[in-house]
Image (cartoon, rainbow, N blue to C red; front, side, top):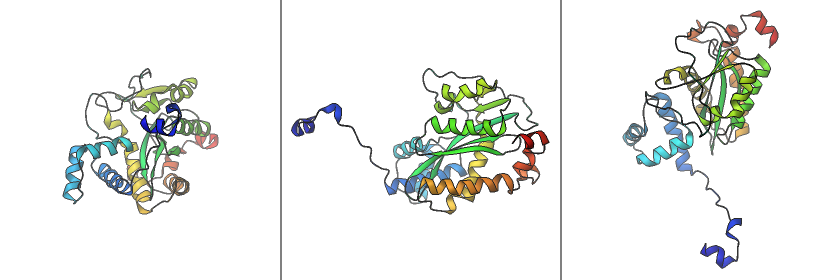
Length: 265
């Protein structure tokens, strides 16, 4: 306030300009991301111990702050795994005892942190759980609802609509802007509840593949460069990368085994 008085400026016209993330924190976030992929059940306490053992001097509060910025948390049984925004509707969990036996039966989504040489971005993907096919994806430098909605709309425009769409209870997915396109197509919205962290394992496996087979191998300089690299990678992932869990078939081979789906796409 005193600075505004001295400069004869109206306080309402002065806004805080956030500082960019420091190179040291970017390097630390990259290491936290690697540890989280390898040990997703580690919280900030254990991650700090792992970092200290590797010679990285850091405190738990700082690691917890960076984890929040990255949008990651330990995977374990707890009361709530993601905090929905106040006023957002939470839908019941629909996958209990459901056997997934065909494409477009169940889709799922999640967001992950993507490190770059300078800075970082967020990646969202829409996944068909039967075939493991990545139906659509988007990158963003902010973790909001808009880029998630764009990915969802592309997936539905190209491949129709699933019977069930499963998400966690994160605010990006509980927002009406995200659920409305699903409800318009009579899709049954399912949201992970207490003790259902295991249902995200297929998307977590996708993130592991993306990062170890593409992101960590290159020091991408910009979001544009990452987007170009991921375009190539997801084409490879869907079309040519055999999956052990699919009896060494590709996601496209599994998804398009149904001629009707192939013609529709």
